[in-house]
Every structure is written in structure tokens, then in C-alpha cells.
Length: 468
Figure (spheres, rainbow, N blue to C red):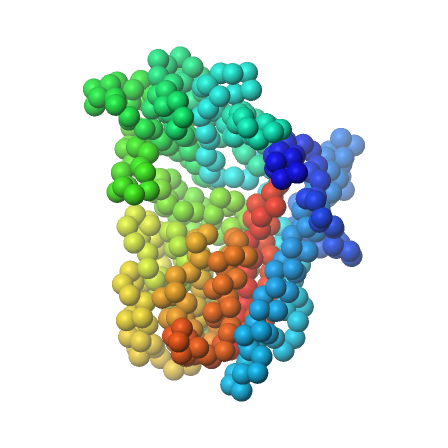
């Protein structure tokens, strides 16, 4: 049954309306009217009969997904509440934040302004297709029994834009005329491993080809690089109009990362978001739905009640875009822990946009925060903003935020509001624990706003407001 579920879920990605997962039910009383008002101007009643049927189908699909996620988020909050009650039971000191049911903190979904083709980054695998051709570029799909894996072309996936499909198809054409095949762990036929395509609203397109050199000589690798550069510059792939073409050697986890090798074009991608021009390096993290990211950043600012008396300590990963998007509304932004190319991207973005109240502190958070607090003027509120990777927050960041008494407001953004995020929240909200070096007063969850960052999927982004 598990394999059958996985297979049917993958197949549902190609359908017009996907069914809800097994055991899930649509939330009662969940109105589409909210989505229509939240995206005013995007949902209308005019158009041809076919266009109206299309919009109705999209409404049904979005309503199903959002209904599923609302029920899922409610269950996660119920689990969190149960665990916090157990930790705080019988404790004579400050108890965990459970004076009211946490489910009541959950607000309606904020929908994505763009539903189809919203991705600005896609990763394509290279493997055997259903027709047996090993040089197929697309996504993995398991057979019914789960024993065979096929690579299916992505043209029917609704979240991938046409430009990404075009680059994937051209790269597939290059592979099929090449003497070298794809790299697979089982057969190791050739060097080609993966294709990554990144685009922006400014019309930029970056292609990154991941390869495994195996036993190829440097001379043979140079020939391959020249061939693919020529293919996309003056050959059939020129129709893709790439602004950047990179290659990168596939690196095992236990080895040092290899650099990106620019073959042609500009070294960076640029994006326009909330009036900011943001620089993005080939390996930098950036929210993959730019339109929904604007909704996300606005939600963070509104939920945290950010104003000109607010000082933000930004613990977000990536290029600092979340904090930089709020800089013009705040007194000061301190980005904590940015390193490497992400730090250079953030510095460029701040300088280009004339942002002077943003600073980066890549050193130890525990050492820096007391220095920053000592230099702050009275009357300004301190807010912590965390938007961790899928691995969650480190123990050091949790302890620093929890033990800094001056931080009274915390905005927590999570793309996986379960697992590690739940553990982080428990540490932030539990009663003081000297053994765990959690001495500050616990935070209390006040509001939780889900953002539909990933239409056509069963994922969302959750923005949570905590105070103490």
C-alpha cells in the first residue's frame, strides 16, 4: 500500500485535479471567498466558458490542498500543545504556553498569487525513460511495484515554467547526440548527473550542469565543456537564451565542495522582489516561488508589527533577502551567521539598493548579541527572525534567542512545520531548563499564518508569531 500511495501521488502531479491523500478530509467551512479577496483581481468571473472551467478546476484543486494542510497544521499544533502540557505539568515556575488551545492561533491561508509555472528553480535528473532511453531528462517515477525507476519528461508538471522545460529538452537533445551517457550510481555510464535551471522575473536564465568526472582526463573534460558551451551559445540550445551557463563537479558529502565553473554569460542571477534588486549566486538559496515570497515577506513584517522602532536580529539562511526586504520599515537589521557567497550576495544587495541600516555579523551569536544590546537606544523593541533550513535551528541559536531577555518578539518561519521545527519550538516555549541552558522566559505562540508557497504540492510555509 505504501508503494501504491507513492506511485499514485506522483501520478497525481500530472493530473488536472489531484485527490486528497488517504485519510485526509477537506476542512469544513473553509471558504474559497477568502482566497478570492486575498488575491483581489486575480480571480474574476469574466472570460470564456473554457477559461471559467479552468479557473473552477484550479479553485477545486487549491481548496483541496489548502483543506488538507489546514487539518494537518491543526494536528501538528495539537501535538505541540500536548507535549508542552506534559513538560509544564506540575512545574511551580513559569509554565509552557498552553493557556488557550494553540489551534485557535491558526489563521487562514495566504494563497500564492501565481499557481502554475511558479518555480524559479528546478532540478532535473538524467536516467532511463519509459521508452528505455538512458538519456532522458526529467523527474524520477517509480513503477507500480517500486522495483523500477523511470525518468519522466517534465512537460506535464504544472509547477514548472515553460522556460525550464525548454532548457531541459535542449539539454536532453545535447545528451542524445553526445558520445557520453549519464552518470548513475549503478551503471556509471558517463559524466552527466543533473541539470539545475534558475530563472527570474527580470528575464534571466541560469543553467547549471552537475557532472561526475569519474576517470575522464582533464583534456576529455575540456572537450565536453567546449561542446556544451557551443551547443547553448551558437548551436540548437541558443534558443534558450541563457544568461549564465555553469558546470559543477558532483561532490560526495564527505569531501570538500567544488566551485561552480562559469562557462559563459554572467556570474550571477538577479531578481526583483518588493522593489529590491537581489543578487543570487548559482549555489545560493532563494525562495523558489518569487510571487509567494513577496506574500511571505509582507506577512512576516505585518505579523511581527515591524516599524521604525524595531531592531531585527535575522537568523535566516540564504542571501538575507527576508531581512533586507524589511530594512526600509525598521530601525536596524542585523543578519546573523551569513557566510561565503551568501554573505557577498547580501552585501551587494544592500549596497545596490542603498540600504544603510543593515549589518552582517558572521561570528558567534552568543558573543555578538550582548554587544549589540549594549549599544541600542532605549525605546526600541528587539525582534528575532528565524527562517532556518530544513535541518532546523542549531542548539546555539535556540539558546541565544531564548536567553536574550531583551528579545520579546520572535517570528519563526518554517517550510516544514513538523519534525525539527517542532523540537525547536518546544525548546523556545518550554519552562526554564538549566540543564539545557534555557534560562530565559518561555515564548508563547500567538498567531500562525500559513502561506501557500508551493501550489500543486502538499507543502506550505508557516509563519508563527511568539511573544513573552
